[in-house]
Image 1: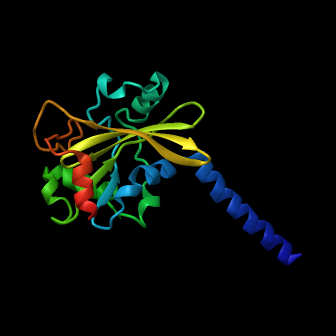
Image 2 (image 1 turned 180 degrees about the vertical axis):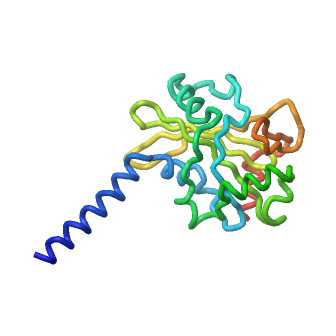
Image 3 (image 1 turned 60 degrees about the vertical axis):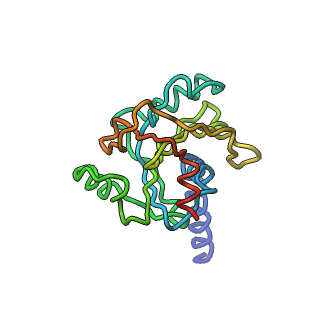
Length: 193
């Protein structure tokens, strides 16, 4: 009888963990979107934002997915769960981000000079949860990322650099994102090397 009770507890625990992953597909999208940039020399943090994307950045993406992305990143939404990236990146928590914002630190001063910070937006999903839209902000640019679930795993559909008219430094008040001639992929590839 005792073994049966333990077996039921183990099964219930496994189902609970699997259910949470199924109920919240955001961590799996984060994993897929950042997999090519995996490096312990890069820190990631959740930071709800549209990354300065405009209507032109959303061409070819279903309006319902764009709307879901915008709703997921409205002011005041909670942070996303980036803990699943712990094996691939350093993780910056919310208190560390608040301290950085309060000090108005430039991207070069985040953490150590060798550890750049990537901010991951919240993920917008289509109603079927078969497509996802998010953005990544880095010190020198931002990228809009569109993914599709194929055979149970998230696959990249497109990634588009977001270039703003302003060449100002990255603003940690989350009102603007910096942009320079250097694309995020170039920056991320260099950071991961």
